[in-house]
Length: 523
Image (cartoon, rainbow, N blue to C red; front, side, top):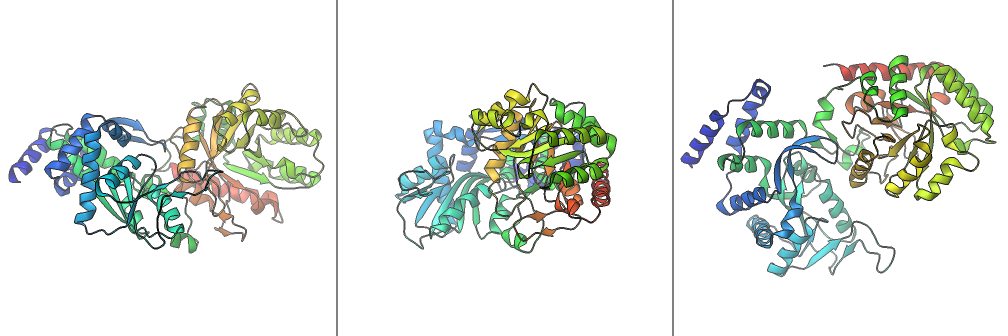
């Protein structure tokens, strides 16, 4: 033990940090000294994971868009039977040692399924499977397998960051009458997942933690101290905080998950600077308007009367960067109304965003976008869609919208209580956007989802005072949206058009939004 500590100290002092790394040196050294020392069997598993490329160091873009110095890809273990078996045995031994009692096991889809299967086979433990999607035929079950009401199910997971993938499995297990009190994981990234699970009554049991992995790999001279410092700094600044249901019941404002880095960070680029790197022309124009007019306010004009719509838009026009319409709710729509809105957009220098929420296959949205009564491609600078149908919907809208210089916004998150646009769905939306940089210009989201400066985050459900409307809408303040969540645009509807003086109310939102934006730029 003393010899190992001496070796570690020599490695620490042998790699003096640069000036940029100096501030992280103390935290890195403390991490190494306090980390658990792995037993020989676990150490061999880690070194094998490193050798096969399942644990990598460098510069990697995660699904969230965040740049990470460490990447763990445990999908590779299925190609190494002996390693897979060793991992399964180590995970089973850990929960046995910790006195965990259970009747059945269930792996979190998909990477943990092979591990759960091996545990089931080696120890003759019944296994269940959770479907990620319910089939429209057959039994239509989300939990497959044989079990009894009241049995305890051990959840098996490969890796936890926020721990929400585990919760997405325990919830349906609980719904069918099973108890889920423990989860065994191979790797805990130590980014808040363990705490999030404990707060939900689930005890995590991890074979490996990032700190113990760094200590082992440093001792084995697979990595050096500057890299340890970089990883430790990343982990400390990217703690994933997921508020429990009790917080939501108390009315506390919360997106599904925000990082500590987002809570403490400021904007790295101004709207004007970001306009210079945008690939989508509508995004470039919008950011320039925001900078020139000093406004990040989008007015959601859910007004059904044509005359009043034009009057209110004309009144609030000087204060907004964008007008959002639900044109199919307008009584007696004709293209003359669209022309008047275009004239007002030119007069007051704002863009028009038709909140159409397309959600069909590619061929259908081509027709919906360019044919029929509304034809948004002719007058709306921006439209939006649900990513649910897959990339075909983007291809369809881009067919006519791309040549016209239009922009597309993906609905990655929603502001209504109980909505399903969370977790993996949101992550898939971010990935889809990255594949269409010249057409997808932003997200409807409750927070900043990516560091891409060309993506504009637009948050609905904003009021000067937070609260709810009794119909599921959850309101947030300009400060919480622009400073705490680092979104870019506040979308306000009823707070303006239901006011006695819409223009004056729009002015208040504009000032509040711009003040919050400037604060988010402060160091």
